[in-house]
Image (cartoon, rainbow over all chains, first blue to last red; front, side):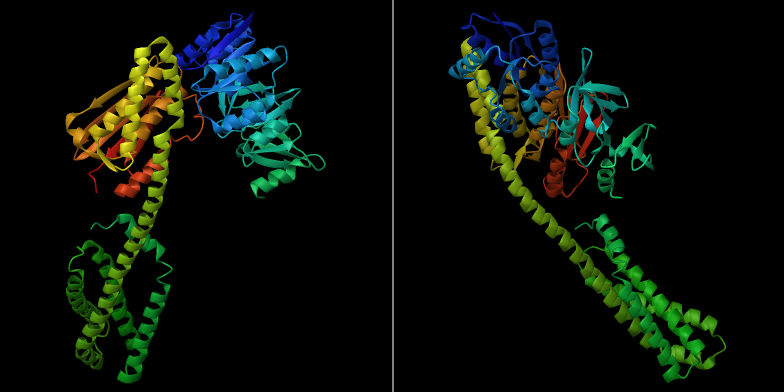
Length: 244
Length: 352
């Protein structure tokens, strides 16, 4: 028996998926969710083998929701019209359905899932591509305990590497995200965020002072007094962006 | 024709450097004046310089006064007014400067005689100078206005092109269309009658969209009819979450409004309401007449924790620009964020 969860904010859209799924006795829909928040909870609770995921949803979209789940389950994406997403799907050979959803196309997608069943779905690259989409690049979605938090990038003070995680520090506190420093170096606006050190990316608007430190290194002092080390290679990058 | 206050302001600040040659010319003329008195009338340097300084200073001040005074006169007959005003001011200039010079050089009888003899010449000099200044000021203002008008016209042309594109997009509205078709697809299975109804609603909406493509102005009632067709369809998709309250005062229904103004605002309110928050949302639209302008208010729930996904500012800058090009006013759209509500206030003046 395959456990499935439907996540789409339109009841009628879920209705059609359910009706198509009636022909599959070995797939059971355990829960229907109206948005990504409900989706995260339902996935944690049921640990489904397959989810149907709408992209355009309230507050956080399908991609942002998926980033909050480790490991990501097998996903069949559903979208009405999103050129950016379609390109990303095709580039990563991920299956998706277009609204209005045709039954034969739906069957093909299920068949593809059943054929591949047991293999880990590779959505990581897709999510990395989508995090750079214009609709998402100005915020980061994180999970703290059971709560989901949306951080506007301008509120980030700095990012710090911490083992396999990246610590995102804001005035409200810090949040861990299972990503790499180079991912954020690439996806954050390079005119606002500079990787000043192997382990630090800093928001230049937060810097009040730059002081010489040992040997050829420097230290950036943030508005809240926090000190951020600047490496020998990080210093010229920072200087060119600050125009000094 | 009204004179735009900002135009005058721009003129005074922007031309400060442009005035340097004028100031130079005035100094040169004053120097020549003093030199000629000394050389040909035989007065001492002191008297010559006093005469030149006082007369020319009064004249220049009067010219500056005239330049700004002219902005307050109506356009029709401005040249006649200038000539009349100049005659009076020229006589005034001569009189004021003569009073000052008499007071300074009270015991120089030869000079005083010369002063009264030269009165008509001073009138003529004053008249010619002031007329020249007045006429240039008028042409300068007109030229500036023409430039402003030209930029507005070319902006309007660009805008028309953009609007054309926008219309095409509105005709297509891919997201809306595909989602609606998906809903119909679902309804065919469960509620065939409702599916048929929605097909008809969608057709009505598409027909009205096409019809509007070549209607730049519609009455509020027409716009509302269109919006209600749109809302009916959205309610099928989001009926479980979406509530729209319309408060339209009767007299406002016949008011003419430009197309593509109200609709994007309502669509935005719905989109941001539906996608910016979870749970039920209520959109309110009110319209009433206020001192011969249509006053509208559109509000939607808003989550202050949320970072709008993209294009924050609700795409309002585009709307603001469009309204400026139509009405030449910048104060027609105002937004207001209360804790949980985002409100847009829209003023629609009479069709220009």
